[in-house]
Length: 293
Length: 175
Image 1: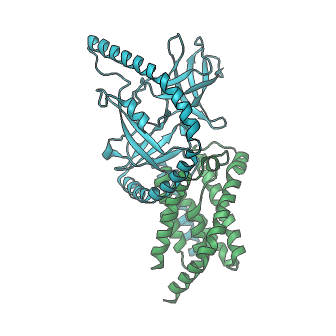
Image 2: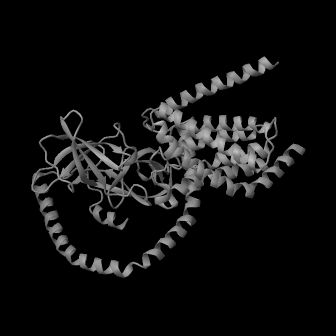
Image 3: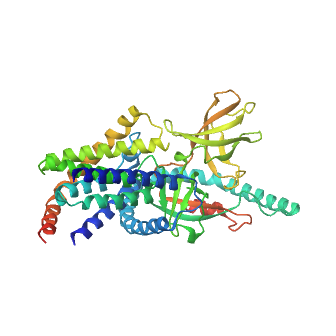
């Protein structure tokens, strides 16, 4: 009898091990979409999270608002000073915009890589395991969200859609990026052409992105802005990513690597925008949407 | 009846785990220390110690189901939490036979359970290259903070649910 019992336990351990390996192998490969049970579970848990999220975020926001009230006066002074600067910028922006429109009409070219339509979403949960830099948002396939779309806050790019359910989706944050999710990027410099590079990973120790494959003869200064180029085929162009902090030669000395400090805070995120790259201009004024979020 | 209550509580902790990460102050949750909540595991260990008898394995089945839910909702890599929680709860259930069920024994089992579970997660995740931490970094940056944070949760949870869980266990075995 004892030997039979031990054999049964051994069988369970072996079967468990096989199931584990099979499930990991099934889920870790690059899948186009989630399986139906997974979508179902993600959506049902998502709704429950929304129910709990509402009151908790209400309390959270009230506390934040009260804290903000103490700094209102100083903020107001600074903003008033900024406002006069903006008036000039708005005029210049309008002038340039109409000039671009005119030029595009003469060229008969209506769509550009920088056009996108945003889907506003709220973050309802984050992965409890810090090794998985991902979070859940309350918009899914039904709202037009698809895999690999760019996700940003009003500050800048924060990640991309990893998987979608019907009403909820999972966002992979920049801090969880590796070589399998590259972003093609431009470094914008004063009085020079843009320099090309690829965001290829994240440095956990310093919290900075790695911009690699920059040509040796390009000179980058700390403080230069990094934007997406739109040449990767997934993201629109002109999404703000971060600023260059430090430039080093890579280990073989053939290209340069820049350390990029992301604009967006990757930890304290509440409202995000899923960016749908369009061929036609669906939303003529995405900039205003961005400020509103 | 009590089985549904336990499942509901587990679901509540599952939702709260994700909520805590987005709601608690960022400088606490997102410091260099990788604190990971294992609230469901803690609760199921209490179930294994006080609710289950020597020959019932309710907590193990809950571990299987809710481990899989954590995999689906929070990590996307299926099976890892599922197998880990199941195995750890089974082990603790076995160890429980040798100890008296009181606060010190329970907290000792909870520490051992959480430590073993987190280490097992580390081993599996480093095999599939989701993490590339060294053992030294892991022990210092993740294992110790995780143990500390989960023990605080255990000490808060224990007085709230212990009597109730024990009563439920008696109720079920008397039927």
